[in-house]
Image (tube, rainbow, N blue to C red; front, side):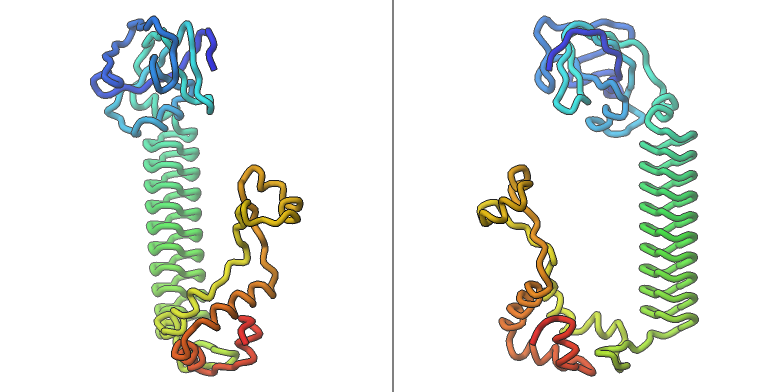
Length: 306
């Protein structure tokens, strides 16, 4: 869309004040005789400084300036990128001014932080040196807790990764104070424990009975590999060309998306699993049925496979 107006905004340049090969200078006025067209010709800028960084790296070596656009203005479909045929480079912004504008928190050296004293990016907490943290004092990434040095923790004081508990040095723990992996209890130094104060891996229940397998044995078993492909999604994507008239009537959203998501009934899921089981070799079936404590009735109740 084209309009004629006076619009103030921001523009980013290279360290030498060039942009797309054109040399600029603070305080100078530039114009071209043609009508501006976004991404084709004219002087580009954004009304919001954050939008500028969708097109430039967040680099303190680049120059940033306030600009005023005069005359004709073209705007992209998202109303983020502007283009004009007349522009004045008003004032250079120093890096501290830039940081204050792209962060809603205070004393941040990163980008898009809503908390305070962050050196990373996209943090909503305070004193984070990592990225995408919603808690405080995190040096890792994607943490929602506090004082984590690992990544993707929702608990607190974790040095491991992907923990939902507290004070874990291992990974994938949902309990507290674990130094092992995949523990749901507390104070375990082993792996895959559901209790507390364990130093060794526990034997697991299979088919409602205690077995001589550990969770590690199950994870490494051929049977588990066979089951990997037997997992049937309860939702299937049905493309427009495969939809019945009744489905089109019930799911008018297909006209926009080109498909609809079909929720499978439990019987349909069991049917798909049975099809998968039927095409397995006898050797593969024997491997599954060799799982300790294998019980045909329980197997059918859970999987639907007969």
